[in-house]
Structure formats: C-alpha cells, structure tokens
Image (tube, rainbow, N blue to C red; front, side, top):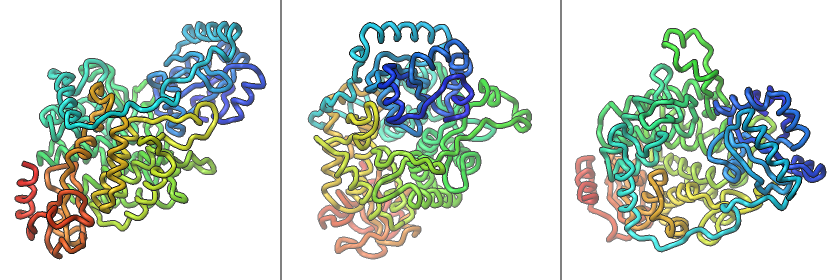
Length: 555
C-alpha cells in the first residue's frame, strides 16, 4: 500500500481473492480505487475525500475497500479504468461493475455512496454488469488493405493543430508513437509536434518530460514524469534527429537520457516514475529555489515493460550518435531484465522485495522481445534465442482466433475473462516482424499479420492515437527496409546501416549465408536470414555505396 493511501482513514485491502471472498461473506459491494504513485489527483482525492472522517466511516462500514496500484496491476486497470486515474469503481463481490467515476470530491463521493447503497439494497448483485471488452466478444477482424496507412495519414491531417502543434483540440498528450508514424509520412507535422513537446513538456532544469497538458495550447501542465513516456519520447526525438541531423531534436533526447540515468536510475535499472510533488509547486520554482527544495519522490519499482522501452530507446539513440552513456546504461538495464525479470520463459512484471508481479503479460513480452531485437541489431548481442523463447510463450499461451489476450486468464474478479488490447497486440506484432526479419521464420510474419487483421474491421475508425497500428499494417502489407551487414557489429558499414534514414528498418550485423560476402552490406526484400538470392541487392562495400542502394530501394 502506498503512503498516500495508508495516510487516509479508509481501511484499504490489497487486491486479491481474499478481498472478494470477504465481500461475498459480508454481502457488501467492493469499492475499488485505481491509483498510481505518480498521480497528483489520486493523492488529492486521498487528502480531501478518503481522509474525511464520515466518508471513511461510510466506506469502511458499507463496502470492502480495495486499493490497486495500476502500474503494478495493469490488467486490473485495463478492465476497470473509468477514463483516467483516479478511477473510483463500485463492484459486486463477483467483480462486476455497479457504477464508476473518476475523481470524486467529498460531496460527489457522498452522493455516489448513497446511490450505490440504494442500488445494492434494491437489486443486489443483479445490478452488476461486465464491461464489453471482457464479454468474450470477437475482435473486429477484417481484410488488411493498403488503405489503412492512407486513411491514417488523412486522420492526422484532419486532427493536426496548426496553431499549437500536436493532434486534437482538447488535452495535449505527447503521443510519441504517432510522432514516429508521422516522421515517415507527415514529417512537418511530426517535427512541429516534437518542438511543441520540447517547448512545453520538457523540464529545463532536471531534464525529462512531464506527462501532458490539460489544454490545447499546451498549458495546464501535469507535472508527473513516467518512465515509459520519457523513454518513448527519447526514442521519438532520436528518430527525428536521424532524419534531420538537427540538434534541435538531439538535445531533448540528451536531456532525457541524463534524467533517466540519474534521477530514475536505481543502480540496476530504471525506476517507474517521479511524482509531481505537493500541488506541483516544486516544478514552478525558479532554478535557484529548486536546488534548495526537496525533489518529489521517485517510485523505484522496476517494471519490465517500461524498462524494455528504455533499453530500446537508449540503444536507438546510441545507434545514431555513438553515445557511450546510452549504450552502457541500456546494457546494464537489459542485463537486469534478463537476470531478474525473466523466469522460465516468461517475463515477470516487477519484483519488489518479496512481492512479485504477474508473469506472462502480453505487453511485457512484446516490449522485452523488441528490446532484445534492438540489442541484436545495434550491438550484435547474442539474444535471439531468448527473444524467440519469450515470443513462443505468447504465441502458445496467449493467442486465439488470431489475436492475443493481455495475460493468463486467471485471477479474481474479471481477471479470468479474456481482454484483447489493441495497443499490446500491435506492439507484439511489430516485435514479431522484427523476429521474422532477423530469423527468416515465416511463422512470426504469419502471426503478426493475423494479429493486425484481427482489428482491421475497425481500422477505418482509428484515430491518431493508434497510428502505430497503421505503421505495423504497412510493414505487413509492403514489407520494410532490411539491411544485411556481413561485417562485425560496430564496423563502419554496420554503423552506416543503422543510420540509414528509415527508423522502421531492420539491420542485421554479422549476417551469414550463401547470399552474403564478408565485408559487404546488402538491401534485402523480406527476411535477412535465409533470403532468396533474387531478394538480395548488389553488394555495397562502403557506407556511400550502401546509401546509394538504400536510396534506390526507398524511392
């Protein structure tokens, strides 16, 4: 239980079967509070609502209160999220939803408590319902066509904010995956959006990016700093630097690298987040005053998926810049992931002393497989067997009807119901396409195609926030740039291949086979390993010759 929850007057219970068994025996609903250590409004609700004596007494007497850290229990958050955090959800003892809301002040909480009590007294558990996402419905499958990419470009153009940068007219999120999609297809939008992110969300004093802005003009900054957002933005700025060579994009990446490797470094890997502090006042201080003030607390939990994104981002930055700090910290974090958070072919979501997170979550496997693939491409690391083992678990245990569930169908309440998240399916499909290029094994491409097709029936309704889907759909339909380097990792030819201006490419160092002659690089149509001779370009012996081959390929 985090300190904020422990300081309230509510008698919180941990998530688990015992809480629901207690609710069932007592004939009471469950009050589920979804929160995060970095969440400013969650702490405010603890201070203003759950600490009010009469509200706390009503909650303790009439409900079984359960507090869940959504970073540690992402499957709970995905099933019960009411649109943001905090989420305040009232459940039956079986875990079905009675009603829910987001932040509730004291007056709002009193009204909802009274309403739920009346509902419970009159209807009992029959008033509960199961969210549509976990009702066992099939995904919106459809035919995958080349129109997916073009439609997404049109959506970006329609949603782009010409005045302020970014997409949408409400709150502004940095949307690094959307930026990366746009870098190849609407580059000016991507670059202007990154400039807006840098100008408004970058902490000029300590480095790192804040979560988002509540207003379309990038005002109303929410000052939390979360690892996965920072890592993904570091990668997006690095990719912008790849295309432009402009230090305008390299410098924010460097500042974020500094933040990750100082403030968020635990000694073994990267901590999960840093809170905004009391009313976010710390971040509005002048630099001289900040130096004398206590910095907001850091949640030093090491999450597998977020650390994998950080490894991927740091290795990407190193590939383009030769930055040794990025390489060293990426290797150390990856070593920790492999040693402490991979067990018997499954990824462990986190460890904290004797507390261990869930094993076998789809997002963890997708991102760790991607990090291992990137380590192979950038460092020449001998990690492909391990990546294949982790991919095999998801392919064998989480896959049905073409798509993947978010984890094992076990646990209390609705955790035993299948949920097929679009974002994690897309990330895993992307990682599988990398494995296909690296290994030549057709089953990875087939599984990626089927995962993307499982959602294709709704692709005409996807907005800019899921542009990554269109990028992966394009890789499935049209293939992508693959470069086989029959030379050592770190050689001039390998470094040049990494810096070819396509951030969706796959680069394979130390490529071997009848189609490749040592000391040369080749552009390959299809997988690098086992490529047919007619799929392999003429050899390039120098970086300039390789650049010419790539230019011909991408025209």
